[in-house]
Image 1 (cartoon, rainbow, N blue to C red):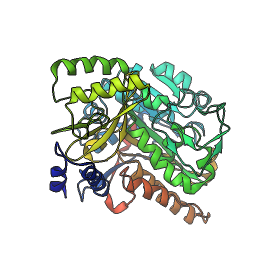
Image 2: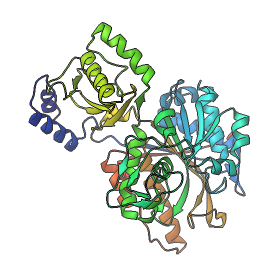
Image 3: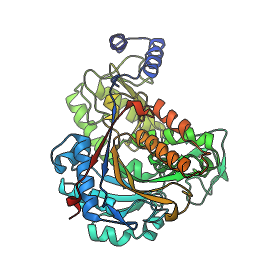
Image 4: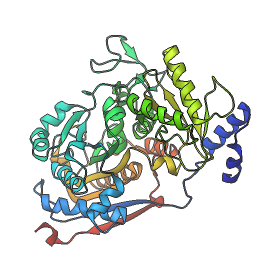
Length: 456
């Protein structure tokens, strides 16, 4: 199949053949190697907590060990640079709605920040964020951020972008004051992604507690990120079938919400026009290998030189005052790049393969399993919690959420608590969208037990 797809991406082929190419790409997950297992690293330290209080030194050792084993690096600095570059704007997504006892524990957040700064990430490039800034303040993160020299941000407080929206035509919902279309419409079927995601962050590390959820069984990385990053999401919390689809769809937009600023685009377009080179990166929103073809259909059904394709689409965008879509294709992948009248470029991904996943904003996921709240996940209930003293690490949020659900289910069955909700459909849809795996058999799970001396 791969060899045949290469022949389809030629300089001249008809619109009908382009349709065939797109269908084949959607049917065949190019670049995902069959048989490759998702790696999950669990770090266990028996003295990480005591009476619900964390041991910061122990947690720091757990985080360092986790990133080293997951990345197969021998030093913490090399491990962090495996996930994050020193010029990234890194967003640490945490859960503060339930405070610091049932939500993300501050000791884990501080350990991650220490690791990033030691690896060379400037403190000003690190942002601790959640859905609302008021939850971060209520959980006590203002003094923590000041002490560590990092920023705080709320996705809702940052406003919402107008592009790459998620629409559910059959599910209109009354809008809240913070929703983007509030005041213009009473209800809407559209969800917008926060500008914090689309315009500020270039990398995201999700740190989420291990906690049950009445609606879907667990409230993990998928649900936590998706519902915190978009507006008009109350409707999904009322309709589980729609939540099952929305979590993965919104995660996809979060992962690939790449853009080029007007200043950078105009500067690099001049360079491209002067050289008339076939290479257009850094005008590309995705890096690729091999030959790249550009199609701006208002100009031609055939591929165009890079300088001509970008210039025509940009000039038309300014004249018509509406974004113009440029189709960019390689031998295995394709995406649409929308050039806006002001020169900003935004990405609309069409295919998902290894090349794209390596460029996702979602770099690392950490399940804070120091404590596990297995009941009443809509409120902080330490009386329904147990100390596991573990941190789980993976690049795959679906895998971590799958393992979280299995553990919580076992605890609830053991304690004779009802198991009424299941995230299987949510996890299954995310898996089909290539966000990760929901099959334990497809995971390579490694458990590391730290010695007690690590806490000394």
